[in-house]
Length: 432
Image (tube, rainbow, N blue to C red; front, side, top):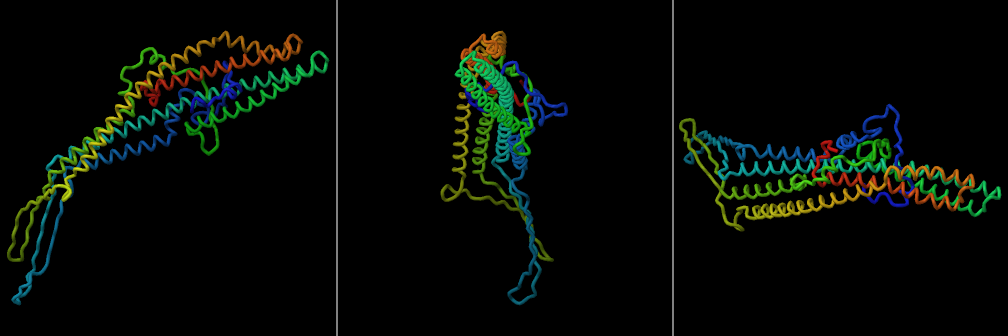
């Protein structure tokens, strides 16, 4: 899920630090109930259609490798013939038989090049499958953290709405008693109406986050059902701390997209060698015989195509040029991906460090103080110790502080996921 998912107005709708996410009944478990930190990745991997598609690509690569391994380029050919031999001088026809067994043989080493190409393509397919699993794990972690933040946002929005309603009731009571003006009551009721809209926005975003998480873990079927909720702490992935302290020097070399592109380069080089080897024509060896009931002739033969220069004939020059060009393109793409990966890692380290400092600024003492003051505002208005307008003015920065605290924690969690991805961590293997 994109980081821009939480706009400011919706976040004010409610992210509460220290508030627990809703829990499910005891019979809810697995990928269709409550998703904890340990279930996020396994459930997402098991439910991913993209991973299943990549597994079929691997199966196709294994099939190509099997097809490249036979020693003979084609099966032996057996030819049989039987017919009469007519004597043009009017004699009786004599039955004549013929038989031939031929076999094509590669002499240019095409088989080795063909196997090298198939093995490289299989490595590329496996690397792409690994990359798909990793991206699914990254998306699942992001959806999980968004779902946690969504539940906290909704909880804070409910608290904010209850607080503003209490302020509105207290202000109206004081106005009716003549202890305050009706304008203050109108202001308090307007604030309560604003809090209602904030709470509804928070509920919409929380439900959308749940649906996204359900999509990742396969709990979205039947269509439209959001039968999953997130459980756990809104805390970053532990592996990110080590990466931020000591970033790897060659993370790009272990990235699945880089490995896949390098394997593609090797496959194209092998294909070019296969076409180049095919310029040496294959031989076809044969054993033949023919004869009648009274006599027979047996012999051996060899045949081969005559290579003609292009464009009169076909020497595979275009196939060689194409494979070499595709190999160079794959090499350039691999270099681009390595440089991009280095940049992504540097940015991810900086992002994580910055987000960590931001989250650390919201200390537990500050959060506790803000929550305590919010709880005292309605009572102070009821007792006449605080004017409604002052309560409204005090409420907003306190709520914004709570919102910013959880948004900072959420951003830190997402930054940890991005750092793990950029650092080449095998999140698909359950590393967190």
